[in-house]
Length: 116
Length: 108
Image (cartoon, rainbow over all chains, first blue to last red):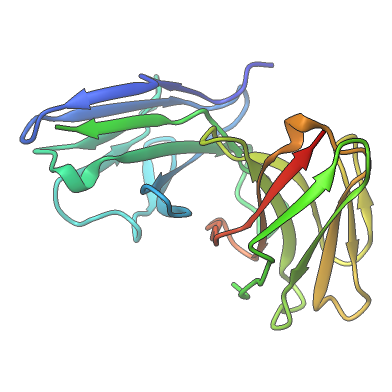
């Protein structure tokens, strides 16, 4: 059973460009979570999605960031007009269902975004 | 979610058991204790979780005190590949809150 897949693993963008990060959840998982890890910091929750629905985007910056999880295909985290402060590792996790505390999230290898 | 307190770092000899403590004195009745680790900036790896009872799997054991205010993750036979940052997380919803964790260094 393949794990959570993310691509690209490394992404370099210049300021003002767009970054698109992709996440394919584990087989059978319909819940996706995105986290961001700034250099020397812990992971911070950004957004929680189910197929075709954003459940909670409270951790995502209001501007320039958006996320989707279409009926078909991977989840996409999109960052428009990137700035140097967006440089970070972005991790995606998936779970089979959302439960109060027994729903284990499994993480992908991450995408390391560098903004020049 | 309840706050957790972990030592900043600890060393362990290869082949010996590594005991990682975690305090969560404000944990509430429906909150689970989860452990993840992150090896050199890779994605966090799930280790184990529990609510009240002690748990064991192929990776580790989790010992939760009777009052649930603290727990210990036990790696029974540490190897060099267990060198990582270990995160103790208390949760009752989907948001995982990662603190600074404990940096565990396994030495030969």
